[in-house]
Amino acid sequence: MSYPFFENHSMLDFQNFYTYVAFTILVGLSWVALYQLNMIGYTPSQMPFISWIFIPSGFKLFITLILRLRSILGLFIGSLWLNIHYRPELFLHDQIILSLISAFTGYLACIIIENRFKTQLLATKLPPKMIMVLSVGYAFTNTILHTVFFNLHHELMSIRFVDPIKMFIGDLLGVIIFMLGLKYSMQILRKLNKK
Image (cartoon, rainbow, N blue to C red; front, top):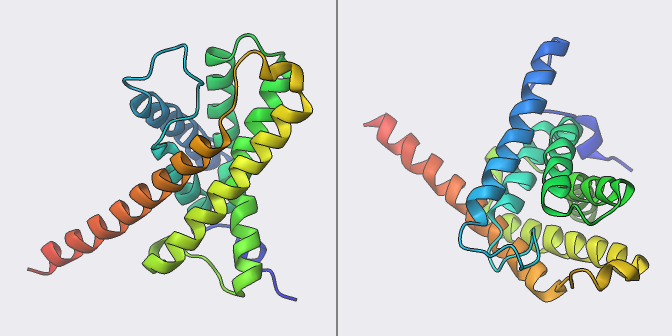
């Protein structure tokens, strides 16, 4: 059985260590910045990382499609910084586990979907139907992993309740809006460049 997601590790060829470090920092900072923008209007008493539309999920999936495994370190660093900042009540090992879940979810969803549909997912060549499939796959995977974590650590549930329905819908809409918005924006730019 072929696993295309493993075969082509990245659309970008990192020739040296410094390029990889630069992209890792860029991914982490982008994730943090998108999170901050997405949460404008949400009060601190509400559950961090959960909103009815969570655009950073779209960014995480998109960057995973481009960088593959190489996206995970940047996403982990960005998630860890946010967990330490917004969830200081959690132990460091819980913050690390949540950050790992956040960083790996997109990669895991892509592997599952590629194997299920026997196709290779390319960020630049995704039809809208596959974007919808990816959105559902990512939202489901992310919601399940976070819900399992918080249920296994039920003592944390009393700190802040995780709403799985809101998380699923937020991730689903966030991925759809980000990915379709990017896809159609690129199509418009290509048309403008041809004129």
